[in-house]
Amino acid sequence: MRIDILTLFPEMFESVFTASMLGRATTAGLLDIRTHNIRDWADNKHKKADDYPFGGGAGLVMMVQPIFDAITEVAGERRTTRILLTPRGKPLSTAIARDLAQEENLLLLCGHYEGVDERVMELIDEEISIGDYILTGGELPAMVLIDCLARFIPGVLGDAASAEEESFTNGLLEYPQYTRPADFRGRPVPEILLNGHHVRIQAWRLAESKKKTQQTRPELLGKKY
Ligand code: 4G0
Image 1 (cartoon, rainbow, N blue to C red):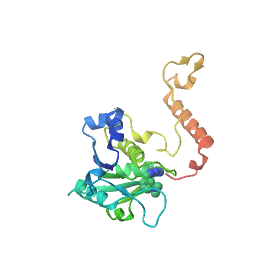
Image 2: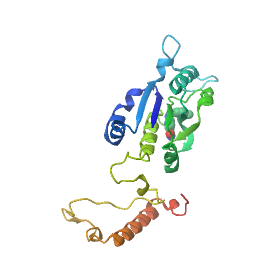
Image 3: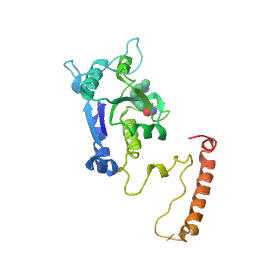
Image 4: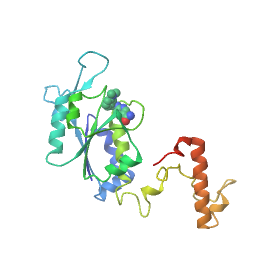
């Protein structure tokens, strides 16, 4: 999958896309992530990409011209799904991430300040939010979205691991996990996990998932997913 990111702060993405699983996916040729500085398309002499809002109000708005030209040039002739990360977007979910993981090309626009000139929306297919809070920019949401959808690209997760096994995929929160040692300074691992009885372990894990969900997110229990 190719992902183009339009941002005023391309340097924010470097470590996230070279480290860990996303770095491995890139090296393996599963991901091709390219960042672009919107400022490079500003046609004014100060390379300004933001301006005061018409009608007044606090803060700055990202200008239409640099974004319009950046999207047009970066997308080129490719068919790409264009996404704006914004607090007014559809809430990100496992289902949305799974759908987007099927795309061949994504273009992510990271807004900043008080948002982007509404005329940019002509070039945008979807607006996505990572939650009901405001951040200083859409860069962290873009990273969250990419990390979340990458797990659904075949081969991105190591070996036999599957994105479908983990939290939320069965509509429940994850059960408790343990690794060695079996006894850490008097804190033992539950005996049932040590005896190798697979069916009983599955039943225990499901019961623990339900208990945890009831305690922390009871609203998930009645929900279709
Ligand atoms: C566009 C996304 C971008 C509009 C972006 C702000 C939170 C999220 C931005 C605005 C963001 C999220 C209208 C304030 C940049 N903050 N929850 N900040 N407005 O996904």
